[in-house]
Length: 308
Ligand SMILES: [Zn+2]
Image (cartoon, rainbow, N blue to C red; front, side, top):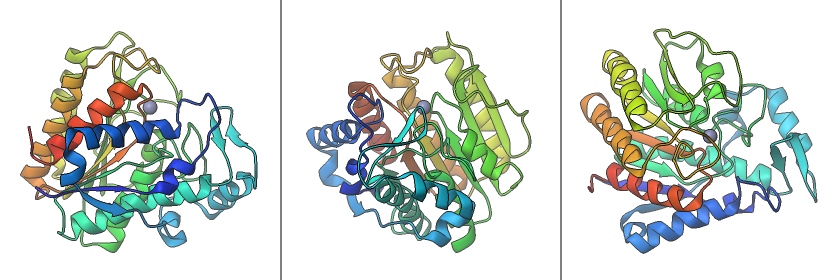
């Protein structure tokens, strides 16, 4: 199985300040781990292009693009909200992050790769069509999914999101689009505190209590995600790969283990093999404890590559 690793040095330039959990050391830890494991050398490396305005406008309003441009300062720091810090190179990093998922779609849907992992930042799944929030400027996975639907011969995609925070932005963008099935597990009640919508033909929200561990997470995936994915039969599977539900990550209370992230990736690979000719486009969302983040990304990528 050929798997692309798509990133860009510009993603490291998104400076969020001294003590921000979403910082450049996250990607450095991931790449160090991939190097040490030997995986880095067998991945197909692709430099992320910058997303185009046309690609962003498939999921964001023009006003949103103008707002993001206007808050990025020439020097020092700007803020979208108390959590979401931007600096001079943040727009460039955000363009690379969304562009990475577009490039991943072109490679995977175009048949050159079975799967791709986008090692990018800033993350994306909290960004709504008209609002940046929660460390996210543009909704990278949504930009990629829209690219598959609009620029390729793809009629149905699934986006599965195992980040511990609800992917409110992805849900909002595709709420009324029956070409996109959104499956999410998340701690609830918890950030982003947006109203929890009921499930629908294109939406599977499975809230997890703060005390949830492996059993609850695996039951959520097995009992809710997998039947919906089997019914929907996505032609490409997108992954919002956040690793902040890990027990070592103090961003949340949910306590998953390395083995849970391996297991959920195996389930996703099985769905893609059954319905999507193995096509998986995965992109990094959260994960702030760098040791567990790096280990779990290595495992996630290893399973995508068909190495166990
Ligand atoms: Zn998160």
